Image 1: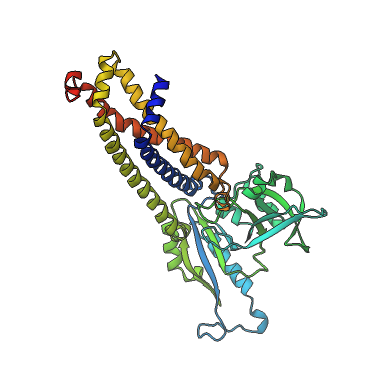
Image 2 (image 1 turned 120 degrees about the vertical axis):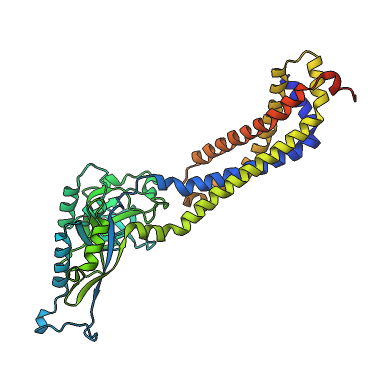
Length: 413
């Protein structure tokens, strides 16, 4: 029966070739759309490496001596912006709604600034180096963002390491693809940006702090300690107690002592949730567009398949009747009809594979951070999806065709 089926398909190649091409285009379209959507959204459901809830951002500003708001010091030695900022930090930490406060430079996620730095092992002359996004933070940032150690250290130990002047690095896809494990760098002395005067000890390996929820951890993260008593930065971050964000915002806006100390003041209070929404708005819209396009494409494809196979089935009513008269059961006829659809689908998938698989080795595919087996998995998913569409498209017209009495079906013959 299988041999006869293949022979029949070969004999009807003129009619089948266009259906095979249609199935190939359908499969290739679904395959690429589903794969791109998967590559876009999968990291949104993976660990972020930090806890964004209840985190707020503040800008630290200085009033210039030319401003009418400037507070003149009693003498020149009294101008100490660091001391004024430290007073503001202390007041924020004493606020009943605040859990932790830290200063930073490029320390928060949800911005697309990439301060790419490299680390190379001290005392080794090789080309192996670690690349990551540099984030300068004071030790309390461990409590603000709640970094996740990959080696089992708790937050108290992580803070102590930053206070000692040690750094953190994270997991990343570059080292993974090269067969290296960033954990092997733990405890090593590393030279930063090939500058032998900047040598840091790697205290621990943490989970990558990605720039957005959708971005893959292609490059890693380098957490560098920042001394809040000696280093000026215009960025501050704080974590409020769970569910106390609204109360903190109201108390901050009502208390002038929390906002300003002489010529240093805090402004631009924003929640990290709002920053995330603004940062990812374009990507969120793009992801929703992919979902809509895929849904529309699937509906259109299945309606097209239904029409195509309905038309083919109407042309085979007499053939089905003859097979029933010859002793074939309904299940045998149905299996033959479904088998023909599956053979045509396999031919279409072979054409689609010949067009799609060369893209797997392209640079764009590698940048998406996907392995070849994920492309194979998506191909199998596409094939199952299209096969289900073919079965659904064939079931009803085949059932209606088999319900017709053979005498009526072959009357025209």
